[in-house]
Image 1: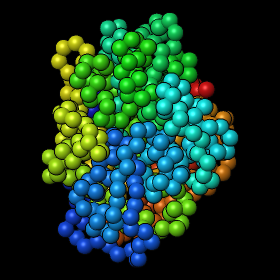
Image 2: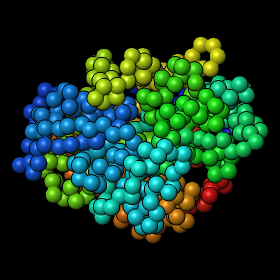
Image 3: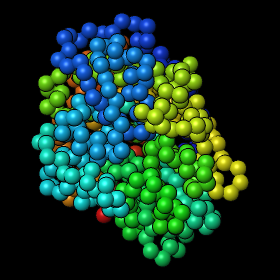
Image 4: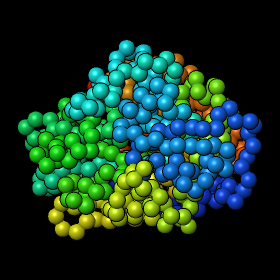
Length: 464
């Protein structure tokens, strides 16, 4: 990549982003009566959340009365892990949940391979292994709507800092960045542990993509492990963990304590990638189609509320409550909501940059996010990209791109219910479900055409 191109990529969002209120993408419903979708099949709901920044729309919907507005009595149930969220969802204890965008695909192919997700993961405590008993339900997890785009970071240990590795923006071009990172990783005697929250986490896929772009083999040069936050901290302190990829809030506290620094944010790896979704089981959705629409409407209104700059000061105190995140008084994660991101530093002053689109809950006008596109729309092309990466790294024993992939994706990411909700909100919907991602969308300036997944897959030199 030429120096000019790298600098253009680095400045993409700064040059093309307008920190827009949610009114840019249709009328908000803060002062509007609730849309009437029909008689609710169920009004008392249990919804699972994980203590991360992207559970914010669900918290806002609860705290600001959006759920009640649509006739729902919702209890948010905090879960320790994504595995536990899915276990509780399949057990019937949860009606819906905040979960990973790729989770429907992950579970679907897990059931096809006959392989327990627990066997795919290493480095777990005994308690967490007990949490991850194989799901016994035959029902499928299906996405209802997107909760946000972007929102993850890749952070490295003090050992990387001492070796001269720095945050991405410290390098003037991609070759310089590649040289610095390759030197560090190749000089390690054994492949270091790299922590992730779940193999289906978008942070896992974007980190692998990022490493591969630099010529670092994610299968040989590092060892990905699913670790709890306490295990990550212990690993950083004894130099057994070289880094981790995660969503916020955990990362900002670690940076404050100078136990790590952020090497890159995944918004700079894939601008506008999908992140978390609101999901249910297909059996629940079939039994409760009207309730599902009311639920989506309440969450959509909350997503619009979260992206409105006028509401920023209201958000941190709400999210920080003990029943949701118990995030404490760390100001850095609160600043994320106001459009700044702290990259940290092991020595010297932390680097804080303006990143208003670090996480988008509904809509901000950027070069990669233009009307009628918005964060809550489920692009089937995003699922196609995830599936190419599952095949690339042979997750769930996938060695070939499935011939029936389009049908599977339609089942797992249905859009009819959300389309009715969007219509009630006077939101325009994108035409079609497949979107070509332009070259400048990705760190390596390689376009993604969802109509040609095999050609895309065959273009990767590094793969399992």
